Length: 280
Image (cartoon, rainbow, N blue to C red; front, side, top):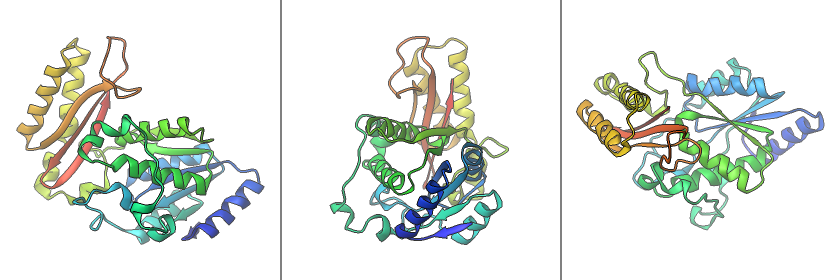
């Protein structure tokens, strides 16, 4: 597996693959890889001749009081894991390689509307940071297809909208959330949980499942459904940011009974913010 740290070497590798007429799949990550990330790499292997993974903790998507400094960085273990699932290359740039100027002076990309609701309302600037770094990584890697996990459902829609609006020649593929045996969505931030919090954490998925069942059984008062879900999270020990029923296509409010729906939630357990979603 090729290990690349700078843009010049990355461009040379991509050019060699392109010269050989090989299809390229890309999996962007922030590292601290778990089985969910590795499942994305395996999906990428099925989509292309070559698979490249980036590991970059993006400062532009963290707020001033968020966990950029303490976000887990486990590069040696990550590289070994990627080799075990057959990645062809890993790109691990320094911050200065991606952002050669002060962050405030860098050009940015923003997807209006989708970036301002749900997690965007509670993490101002987060999706601008996501869109900007993914745009730059797409320009560097020039993939035919990019794979993202559906745990970050809003992020997938933001990136898909960006790719469509900017006519990017890359297919955005989303892969199902990978879960622990008790239902907890796999996340690098799960490592922040205390043993007691880890026992409580699967209740987030359980509450979402309860909300889904209400809708499947005919409930349509979404405000009441969401309120009951919030109460369920609070009763379990969470501090919810939101629990919301939205249209899966665009995260707008449901309009009729034929809508394809998704139920999304974000909630704190102690100081750890967890997100999850289920489709209806």
